[in-house]
Image (cartoon, rainbow over all chains, first blue to last red):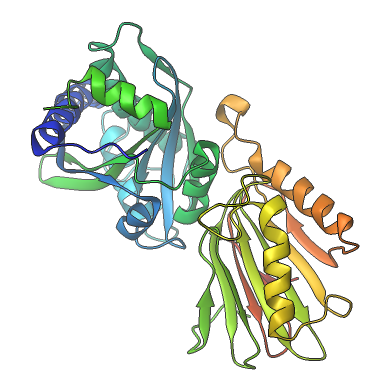
Length: 214
Length: 161
């Protein structure tokens, strides 16, 4: 059954994402030694078709960091980037470890080639970002929810999404999608954070945040 | 060999089927992960159909006609027959059923989809002449109705099945 949210309810959820992304930025900043700001200027409930449109279509290649969610809320979360943006984010995250231009892979010649170090950094970016959301959510739950270890997949957007949609046995309008911008200095990188709770977990999530019935 | 744009491009989204008897029609299912695409092509009447199945089993009254293999396969085969194909002559090929995500071990639906497709076809006295099932890669598939070519595109290649 579809759950409807008032504008006030949507603002409550957006506020949760916003606080979580602030914490994610702080964590990524301490990881990289740079000042990283993470913003979620746009949050929406949407369908799989909407998300595929946001990603550029089902055949568009994305780098996705997947984290499963289990506990009092169950489901899936994905942080999606275009391959060039993923390289740029990896450069920012690894800046404290490597000097400028020292990335082992030349992303200008093959945007789909990633060094292990880059993949590890991006995996951690997804882990930190999604865990920040779960931690923020956990403050409102009697029992916290836990993330699985992250997994990075570089694939067609449709193929990545159908893997989680099939597990939800649904293509209903129950995803929470947040356009997410990672900024450092003058550089800004766009990603999309998707939270896909199981149908019963979506109600628990929204109820815990106080987003229902207001 | 590439998957090309075509004025008669018919797209089967998740849980959808498309079919045609037009010689310039290309039937496409984009970005298959764990889902399975089943292609049927009759070499005599040159009628083709493509279905994009989502799950092994489910209710018969699903909103999408071919969302589930067990309840949607007959509807798909009958629709292709109604268009002019004979199942006695038709060539059947399938692709998809990949395991895109391995974390947690709970997302092995691709393998179950592949098994369900083989079982459901065998129950109807049918079999697949060629497959690209399983693995860990996403696929886009295209059936060219004019000559029955079935192309599989992944990130690294385009191959004919």
